[in-house]
Amino acid sequence: MPITEIDKLPALPEEFVAARDKLKSDAGVQALLEAIRADDERTMEEQIKICEIPAPPFKEKKRGEYLLGLFRQYGLKDAYMDEEGNVVGRRKGSGRGPVVQIAAHQDTVFPEGTDVTVKREGNILRAPGISDDTRGLASMLSLLRCLEASGIETEGDLLFTASVGEEGNGDLRGQKYMHYVKKVHVDGFIGLDAANVGRILAGATGSHRWLISYDGPGGHSFHKFGIAPSAIHAMGRAIAKFADLNPPEDPKTTFNLGVIKGGSTVNSIAAHCEAQLDLRSGDNGHLLELEKTILTAFDEALEEENRRVNASGDMVLKLSKKQIGDRPAGPGDDMSPVILAARAGQQALGIKLEKYTSASTDHNIPLSLGIPATTLGVGGKEGNNHALNEWWEHDRPWLSPQLAGFTALLLTGVKGLTKPLLPVRG
Image (tube, rainbow, N blue to C red; front, side):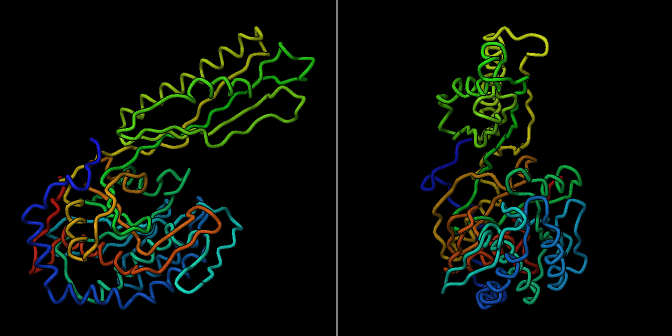
């Protein structure tokens, strides 16, 4: 299903409007929102502290242990770290409502040894990972801290999660473990990732990633010319076959060969060449069709390179294809209760809906299981994400935990005030 244009979105159902207005006018909820704003400086200090605890790919444990301590300190006494490294804590409701998962991810893209010292320049913080997703973790902690202090009782449960493996070849392993392996029951999902609080992710962009390798005998570039097949030439043949493909624009479907390695010297026929392929689409059908086309191109290139030199026996070039990433796509649903609650929350807080789109992040996993899900902004402004000169700017960042909190309260219901707007899944 294509993502709906903002000006064509349906009006909010009456029950969402009524619940929005009740929460907005409630003294307890207003006190919570004010407490979150007053918590701003502490949240930023926590953001800096978290950022300076390295969380390289597949090595988030040190940061996770720190976050586990904060979960427990802020009221989640039964919080734990699971076998995959996710930090999980449940804020229990009355037991008569749905479970809403609120998640931000621990990991960064930066390898061990990266200097993650934060430099503060007025309203701007600079450091690798200072925004993505350190600010998401800090916003989630601010919501938890202020919600506990408020005494607000929800009907449903809130499952706070600091997940691992969201970035790159982490392949959403934290959320996959929770939902595919442990099958933790949740009825809805709110992720916190990327700065813009005016953005709502309505769908999930699927991504398949492959490691493609050609291997052969190699040989001297002069003496073995026309005798030994070249791994690099085979890769070039494959690229030429799909480089000019025009995949669908709606839903947006893309391909990219992002990394390529091979060869040893300028005067050697390459015995090895490998590449990493990224395929994306908002629709699983289009993704699979594109994948089949491009993977077939690598097979055809192999045959052509071997045939060119009449390779046989030990001289034959071989091909291997290994999938290194599988992020399922999830269609948008304008009437999803999580989407409707997020829109209602934006309206209550005076936030303009600026982007209504899809992306690839932790919410892909619950969406793939039919669980209503979205990802909301972490607040402030950001730039140069995934680069050493990443920065984050203080610009009303309290709107993020306010929005996540208001959205969650609409979904879980507030005891004595509103009923849950998120159905309990069977």
